[in-house]
Length: 486
Image 1 (cartoon, helix red, strand yellow):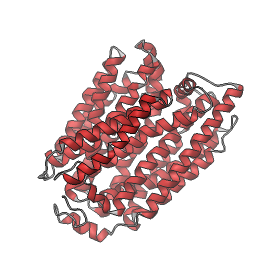
Image 2: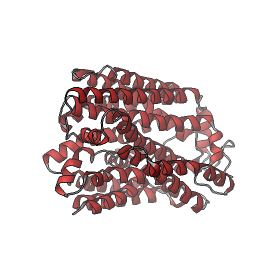
Image 3: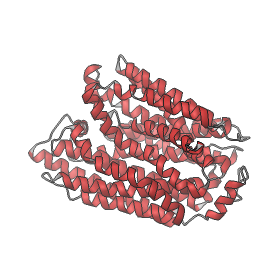
Image 4: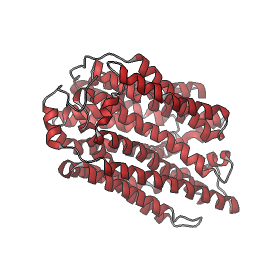
């Protein structure tokens, strides 16, 4: 008979997999959506971006709701909203309706992501969490990459609307398990920090929207001002969070070195790794001239390797500690990017396959061990907040990876050409192809540098004391002295 906690793990895995897949599943369907809904391309690109913006801006806040109202309740509500948003997205009669439905779907994904790591931490003690996070990390980290493949296959075989409809039966299965087995945690006696929440949403939205506009149109006064003001608002946000009784983000908690550097490593890794994925799609489609579906299939070996090794690497991190495993994984990923830097206009696809296997193996080491380190360094009553923060930073990384891939790859060709290459509707020829390859190499080099910094962040964080962590976990709601609430 399957243990209760393993059924809970399945429900969390389903939620993470669906919400992550939908960050990228639309990419290869955009040309078809644009044509069938008779919409301008610059409008349909927001079918992807609105989802990423919602995830980036709201995950921390809605993860906090799990601490206050119960994680099981909020997680299952996330399933309901995500299922409804998926059905509405598939039904969409026009692009405005589709963008709105995707935003609604994004709020469901936020509730799923923001409470997922906290639920795992609730039901698994620290010495088992690495393996558990190894399984759930397959949902989050592989889902984003797998979404591109599934989007191509489903759109080609049965139509773009089914990339959303497929979520409905899968989501219902996850919801049934979640409603039956996931119970609410003891609710924290905290209040919602409305001022901090509003300020965080505003600054993240301004930075994210400005960055997206920069990727699409280049730097101008409006998007530059948005990003600048959003960045400046970080200062009053930190001041406010240090003064309120129950802040959205417990700033004092970042005095814990393991937590701070683990979160930084997660953010940098998301920026560096997913930008590589976008760059490879542009290379395979724009330089080698492969179809979107075939281009995505070439990357499948890396996903398989990552899926196979993630649980084992998570278990290894339980045994020897997260720092060595996570840091080694990051440097493997950086090594895979070095392989990609060998690509030319006539390279064999086996170079891409080799690089994807190396990066996939590195990812299987980093994701579960780093997640385990983050949650083990967090106080129990702030699991939801820290889980939400981890996902928020990863989602911001996903958004900025897109910005980096498009912006740097387009340094030598017009931006609209880079967008068309990204979608697989244009193959470059002759000198233009060589110029675009120069941009791709520049983007890969930027990703390599970002991954190196991510590895260094992981390496210098130190190691957490598992015995101390285990003691704090078994003491229930007691807060470790290193994490004062106020």
